[in-house]
Image 1 (tube, rainbow, N blue to C red):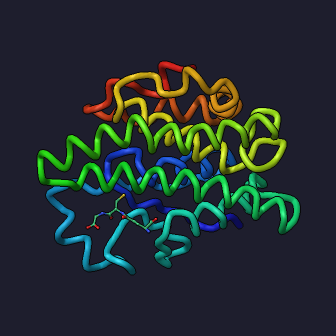
Image 2: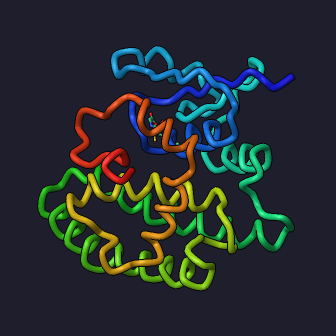
Length: 213
Ligand SMILES: N[C@@H](CCC(=O)N[C@@H](CS)C(=O)NCC(=O)O)C(=O)O
């Protein structure tokens, strides 16, 4: 019997969305538990690391996004076929996570002058630094990240793309045709499409992956 999955995350995409997509892609049923802001102080101390996402599997709570994703990717066959392929996928994902962490760092900067300078650097230097390297990666893998077929790094890229679109408020992939192929390869999957159509909308989003279907 399939395990009972419950995903605990905020009512947001962020680190939770690639997990939701892998579960959906694999046809694995899950409870999509969305913690409201007002309940967070009460929920936080009950979590293994005081953070979300947490994937509950048959009543046991597991934190850490990429650990959860690696586990699910194995279940739904979006991992690599051998250790070297898994290394290549992990390299791509860790690169996306590095960029994601810079964006989080920016959002937490409270000093207005520092924030302005950091924002400029983020858009003009940091973003192209990472995206140009990821573009080369996708180019050499036929429109996928890490290896030459759909895998969980592609899913991570697609959810991050939605984040970039909202964060930078412009199409950051115009100059990166192979990264556009990565997004398309994820969004043409029928179960992923169904999920994107039915999932709750994020009120603050000006761009939604629905626009891409
Ligand atoms: N290394 C963890 C980081 C998790 C993390 O920072 N989660 C954020 C939400 S995306 C969180 O729970 N923030 C609230 C808090 O730390 O109190 C992971 O990758 O899952």
